[in-house]
Amino acid sequence: MAVRSALRKIVFTWRPGEQSLALLRRALPDVRMVVAEDDQLARELRDAQLLVGMPPSDEILAEARQLSWVHVPFAGVERVLRPSLVERGVTITNSRGVSAPNMAEHIVAMMLAFARGLPDLLRSQQKHEWRPWGQRPPVFELTDQTVLLLGVGAIGQATAHRLRPFGARLIGARRRPEQAAVPGIDRIIAFDVLPEVLPEADHVVSSLPLTPTTVGIVSAEMIERFKPGAYFYNVGRGGTVDQEALVAALRRGHLAGAGLDVTDPEPLPPDSPLWDMPNVIITGHTSGASPRTEARVVALLEENVRRYIDGRELLNVVDPVHGY
Image 1 (cartoon, one colour):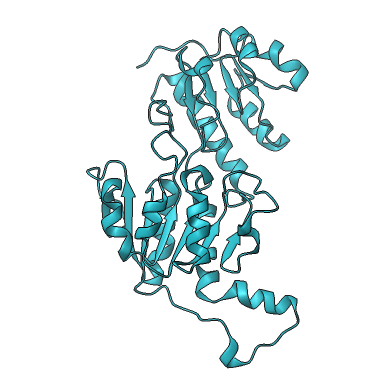
Image 2: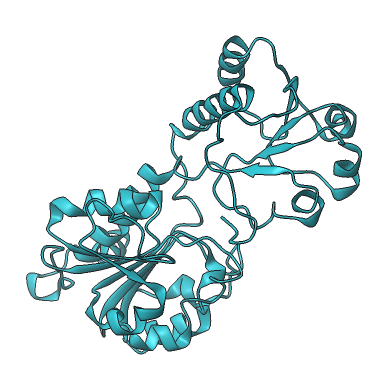
């Protein structure tokens, strides 16, 4: 059993609802919990062992000498893996998997929107236009189509689970393909063989985090390898994609469409050509939203605090080398 300093105080920079906070206080009565405002944060953090939320400035962290653990209530940690935390050995955990169900549904919603021609039909609705049968948008079915998942973590697996009933063929790409098979995914491949597999995919879905090895991984060269007429979806991070190459491929029809919950930069500038492309769905980084998110974060946090107190292995520990 691991030896850890006693957990006496938790400081929140992420503000859970009053009911969630009350639930945590009842479940962990021996731990003091403080929701700190900006002007209180430096003082409150000095004797805290756990910070829940985005870390403050390095100057404030330098005074938080008892801090040994940071938990972030979301999955992406590229802004959290700072030398001021990593070099002093602070454990960082995240909430990966918490939003997987709703993000998977978001992906499937965008996919079905393209399948049924909804973007075009919604534009006709806005114009009060009932289109004759011969002028309706083309449609397709997901049955027997191939979906390539870039990333087979919680989001990729949840997406595969939801697409399986549609009769789609599912391929997953991950850093270490030799790991155990993933339920619901027909084939697992390594990233280095993506150029060979991309021409098979009718849909390419990225849920990749932003790490040193994934920056720009969906490159111009990779986009050229996409099957003509394929669709691309991104719910991970905008910085994983060569956005100019994506725009060019959409303009010339090499790609039939794109569903983008994330872009680079964010917010997407008003003059970006992506806004006005008829074959693009932009959802403004909303795929992670769900009325169940907070409850899931709180449940994960409670479980991890109990594990910490008991000296057990924590869930969702971030590897600072790989960035997730």
